[in-house]
Length: 143
Image 1 (tube, helix red, strand yellow):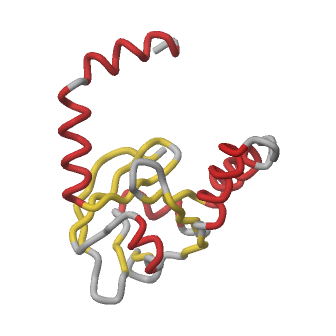
Image 2 (spheres, helix red, strand yellow):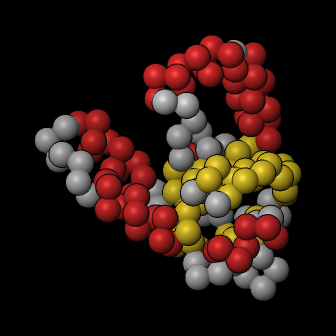
């Protein structure tokens, strides 16, 4: 399980250090792809396979299913941690998430999210301003 929020920098060679706390789960490799809300998702290979299995069950006849499949799968790339615990961010994913030098790496249970620091602050401020309203909606989901 991935939890926590960490500030990191992307170096000049598009490498991003993954927080030490997350590295052991990613030693066997990982998959990075376009995420939702304009961030990137980083999955362990087993979590990625679980998501792929679910995506493969989506109806091909539905436009939203095709669109989601394309966004997640065509944007995906396998990555490995180097000796210093860094991954290489592909240019097309860096551009998609509008990542600059400073990023936030956050653990969200089964995935890691990578956000441009400014975008994350804006998203977080907005979410925090209506947290009670969001919490009310969770009741319908049994939370």
